[in-house]
Image (cartoon, rainbow, N blue to C red; front, side, top):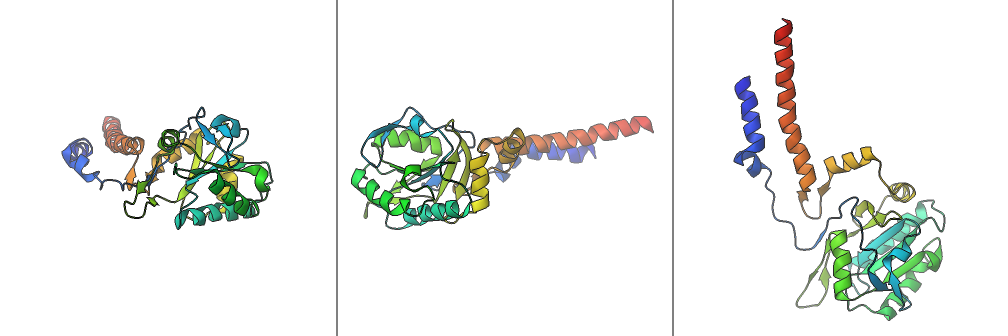
Length: 249
């Protein structure tokens, strides 16, 4: 029995264990937001009217932030329409949240953002007052993307940007409360994320345990550390139980 326990410890800590946890490298385009991560609220972007806007001024309520770019010919409009549909079916009242689109392409300008806003506002329960579409320069956008764990890859031939599909809900402090991936979303889950944007301690533990990033194909460092600690702890607890039982008999 002792030998079996020692073997388990070797598998958890030694090279064999490390090899078992090795995964393929993540794709170049990725969306891997960290729960609790905070946006750079001092960043200054432009709204759909062309006015400078400091990110912090948008966070008087929970924010639904959808990254993408407004000239995208494929995925971005599908993702945004999926968010609009989920919000429309969520039962949320106007003013409970702010919907923010973020173009990660510095080539997008105010005119493109304004045109998109006119199309999207008609589908939003709160209309244009709850919707802001942002653009910005390359350096500022890079800061925001880094905080979101969002990375695009330009296509040399077409100039289009390869990117993942999804969005985040942020609390009023600009911290990531929940991330959604895909193009169609559960209205009830979105409503819960907006109305209770800051996860409890128990929810944070669960997110840590289950935080597998499908867009990058890997677990976070914290999740892997948690698993390794569990592999080490369970055999030690079992050995302690055997020792106590031996003393009783």
